[in-house]
Length: 120
Ligand code: SAM
Figure (cartoon, rainbow, N blue to C red):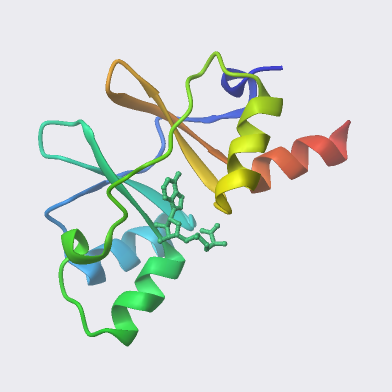
C-alpha cells in the first residue's frame, strides 16, 4: 500500500500570514491537530500542530509565522506506508504533508495509519 491509498486529499491548510488565534479556530472548525502552512503563492512553508499552539500561548506569541515549524518533513503519494511509518517514528512526529511538485496534495497522520492497521 502507498500513501495515496489512505491520505486525506485536499486537506485543510492555513496561510503563513494568519494569526495564532485564527489558526486555533481553523483547527477546531476542521477538527484537526495539524495544518500545513502555505505561502500566499500556495507553496508549502511550514507546519503547525496543536502542540505548537500550546507553546504559542505559553510564550505569548501572536503570529503563526513566529511559531510554525519551517523544516517540514514530507512524503510523496507514491511512497509506501511502511516508509511513511518509519519516517513518523524516526522524527517523533504524527503527521506528514504529501507534496507533489511543491503543492500539498494530502496529509498522512499516524492516526490514519493506526486506524488502517486496526481494520486489517
Ligand atoms: N507528539 C507531538 C506530535 O507528533 O506532533 C509533538 C512532538 S513533535 C516533536 C512537535 C513538533 O514537531 C512541533 O513543533 C511540530 O510543528 C513539528 N512537526 C510535526 N509534524 C512535522 C513534520 N511533518 N515536519 C516537521 N515538523 C513537524
